[in-house]
Image 1: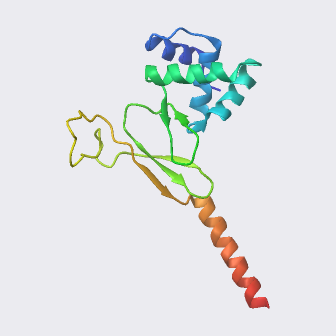
Image 2 (image 1 turned 180 degrees about the horizontal axis):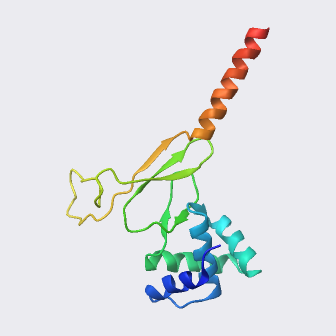
Image 3 (image 1 turned 120 degrees about the vertical axis):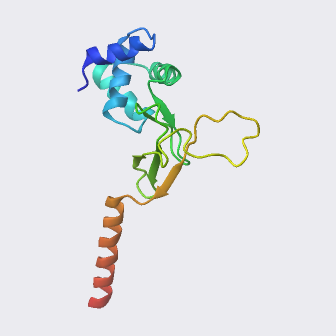
Length: 155
């Protein structure tokens, strides 16, 4: 459980009015980094009893616009939300289960990567998504491979 007073202070600090849905949604994002909207809706409903999907989407949009929440969209995945903002970190996504983890910026300063040609843009952020296999899925695959090898040798 996230301290409700802290959540209210976070909202006020970015000039957002404190409402029960905003507090519930912000708390849900803090407790479940990289959660999708459906997960956040479930958590908000568990906290509030009743809240519409549209209300949660509206709150997420307001939190993203205010800079309290970051929206990431890995290919083939619904949008995900997190409260780690402002440090230009990146993400690694498991190709098997879809788990997402934070990866700190390689250079430590935004935008982390320098474009070979900015086309006149003033670049302030680089978004990198690494893809691979998480430790749990790797372990499962190795176990399955071992079981398959053992089953073949038993024949």
